[in-house]
Amino acid sequence: DTLADAMPTAECVIWVDRHVHKNAGTTVREVMQALHAAGWLQRLGGYGSPLERWLALTRSLATLRQPCAPSVAATRIAIEAHEKTGSWAGEWLPALRRLRAVGGASCCRVLLTTRLREPLDAYLSLYRWADIARRFRGHENASFLRWAPPNLQATQLLRGDFRGFAEGN
Image 1: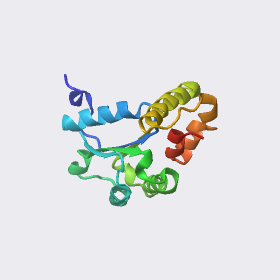
Image 2 (image 1 turned 120 degrees about the horizontal axis):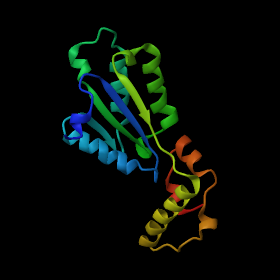
Image 3 (image 1 turned 60 degrees about the vertical axis):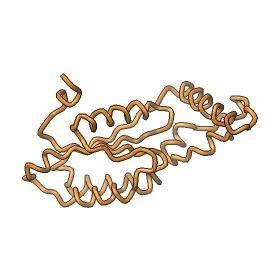
Image 4 (image 1 turned 180 degrees about the vertical axis):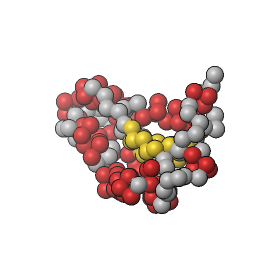
């Protein structure tokens, strides 16, 4: 059996994964890529996933009503909402809320996923990643305590701003 064989066949699914740095987003991206390669879904996303595509998709889906056409049932889309995709709370989520509010989700199941690591693991992983990037650019290594931003995961989820973490506090 392949990965695509294990997936349901007659259900419209819009899967939006909120990619938060250093929280297994790359692993989820690889799953999406494998499902795309197997022909099970259409994948939109990665770095700089266009907000315009997401807004156009949600506007189109918002017009769907039961009973849904058979071609709609075959629709499967995965979107990697990477942190660089713009304002998550200000633009992506409101479009998702509008879609759910008007009933467009009645024809398509909308699945929203994200992951968070244990806080210290997240800090250490991001620090090691940022340290390699700093050294590659010839910058001095900052101590972990001097570098550690407050409320790391909450800030990543709410603002998605990542550059300051890579450079240090």
